[in-house]
Length: 512
Image 1: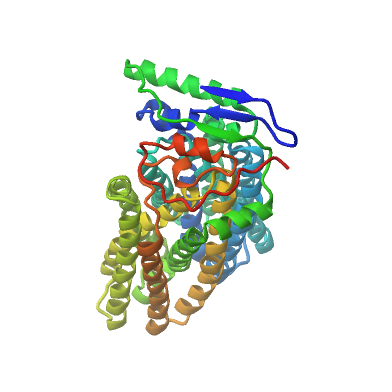
Image 2: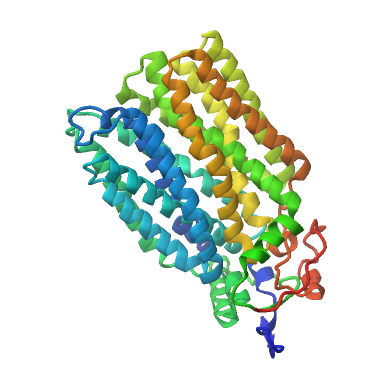
């Protein structure tokens, strides 16, 4: 139910709505699975992309590949450009996502990814390969902002943590596929040296097209529609969802608890976003930055060089590294899959801090064993499985955290900002630095890279232990009050949802 009042001079309409409460009280249904499939599967493509490029680096640098490029340029320069594209894309598309809506942008960004991946497949010069690796990342960066904001606004509060972790963790399903696909692509008895790697990129474009067709059926976020003056559309979408869920369950839905009064507006300025994120929610900003720095360096620096470590230190043939990477990718996916529910039951603070700390400590142990020379290719892979089982759940929780602890109007931009800032620090410098360290062939240099990643993960875990927000099973509007919400109704909207950890409410904003 949504009711509207006449606008005050210089403002948009003021509406009273229970739509957020209606969305949060829904039981899990087939409709929610549609959202997961339509929006979440893109991370499988991201995992496929990153893994394939890392595993085929050796083949691309060989004569007859059709490209004049070195292995270091693939794992260093091209990897850094991909991450740079993702960072800039996140900022560019994130702002547009908050302004023009989740659905428009998650359709556009996927099309950018599709086109750039297809054009990567026809690379004939190194500069062309670099350019479209950057543009592929540019599309993926926009996906992070648009997808995570849409998912959190559509999934009920009781399931938000585990679903968000599972979706972000699905990156590793793509990594498994990329590892196995690279084995086929590198087999010259099946495919010519200048054909196999091209087909892997072409397959990524085909899969993106399939996801694009499914994604057409995902609606715009009703929460976003409410704030931007399109409450009739929001009401229609939510009513349709409720009817579908009632038909599936055969039972009437429980009455929603609480209402929210919103002063509608078209946009929020950069100044207001900055003031909100870094002024009103300073501690949460420190938390978000710490989590992204830790996970970005570990993943973007160390996993990019995993294949090089196997070939250089353990003489594993280049066309066999995919088997090892498939194993650690399975470990990565199992982390969010098996631990995700605990983020909704045990709680965010305990689970975020413990997964970061455990992964960091296990990585220190791996570095020590590697330095002693007691690890084989198989046992190193086993150690990495253990490290990344916890690290993957922690890394996925970073995206969950920044998408739920800031106000609705700043959500996509907040995701974009912390992703870009953290990934730029660890993801651009990381691959380049790590490629240099492993390229020396000295055990001590590789141990140093492991130790840096471990230290940053542990530091982030300690920050989370003190600053993480207990957001489990709570409405988004309770965790961070919308900038457009009237204080009197915002309190009523979140009754029975648990104690609020909000700082003092900012004054109700009017439309500029």
